[in-house]
Length: 627
Image (cartoon, rainbow, N blue to C red; front, side, top):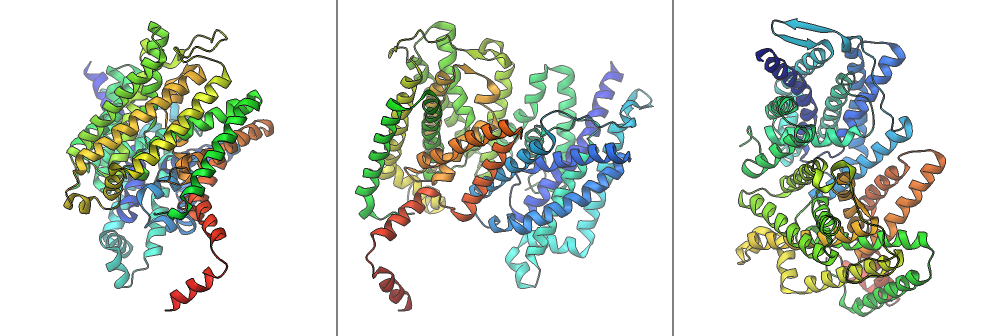
């Protein structure tokens, strides 16, 4: 028994050193640039593929492959920061998040196009060799990866502490403006920093290529793992990255011995939730529109919904099915828009609330025959309570900003893993609704595809009207004040703590209602699809593309993005190019934030203003500027 536990601990420590190197790249970037690289997992997977191909083509040792990965990924990271990332360094966190999610989708799509979805094992001779040290037996591949990672962490730490560039890097991290005043080349420091972070990810990926098969879908797991690791040790802390890696590595090894596979996977996220709530910084770190356009704006909205109503009556089944999804994600996007666009609280795990609504409807209807109307109400109450609980715990312990966003990811992933192993709700096999009998049953919310189209249309209209009502109400003014400057709002007597809980609970309940209807439309519920990170991205794409914080933005964004995604998916299937839709999504998100940071709908409003302006308006405006 002692031998077993010693082997488990040793295995966890060795893998934890590699996890520490992965997290080190993320924490260096955040510590200096204050941006959170949500595409970090893709960079690790790039390293895994570099390790796979260098070993396969040239039959070189893994250490040589890691050195090649370091050079390639440093250059890649340097160029990526210089060309794209630097434009968003001083933007709000949600803009950075959108850009990096876009990059993540772009990179994962490129990996799918280049290598396909099939796993590729790296053939290393060390994978089949072991070494015995008393009661402990270790495989040489893991030992080599850990020793190399530990050595690189030590060398990088010494370089950053004693070199002149290291001093420049620390100065830029401590005071960017002060660094500029004394003559530091801050853009170069940032580019090199991002290159070092990418190189750490690439080296770690190459080192673990004999332990993990190369496949694009690993990227999400590595991104989440890196966040768990850095939060445990402290986001931005060098030593914290190493500590977090060791803690997560050992925790995973022990969980694999003591718990079921699903519990083992969920343990790091449970640990992340606890640390974010009680010690969020880790253990080692102490627009207004012209009212003259109101009538035109609402007339245009009514016209759009009238056209959508005609589409529901006249279109073919494929268009009906596609537009039903567009309208449902318009409603879901409004829930996310309410939380961030009006309330100023960034959620990256909104799929948690969607999934709770879906499972509430599914379990009550499939297991007990209870009407989906009751399931929708139950799901809204449950999701609103969960959202309020997360918000209370978070804000009670001063977890804000990006830390709150990470907490929502952790909660969503923890719930997804729990539902994946819960047999009562179908686990990974899913929960299936009985086929419709053919007629329309309003009391049971059952009907054909056209019936669900009009249900989704009604939800989308309700979401738009509700958002507009809240925006013009007392709550809307209070929430926008809280979003723009929480300290000033609190000084004016706004109870920001209670209002943040309220906006999050309303947003969560709204998302649950959309999730319940989405489950009925799809006819089945699977935890990976209804609670996965992919659904959270699908929810936010409408508000981001259409216009965050606007009433019609989620509708415009969903109408633009979702049909494009389906078109690219179909085109990719016909051309046998997997991942083409991910590439398209990524390019669209980056382009919108880059060229239309306010979204498509505000650009349309500005265009309408320009069209309605008198011909001499430009001359008057130019004279006013001169005066």
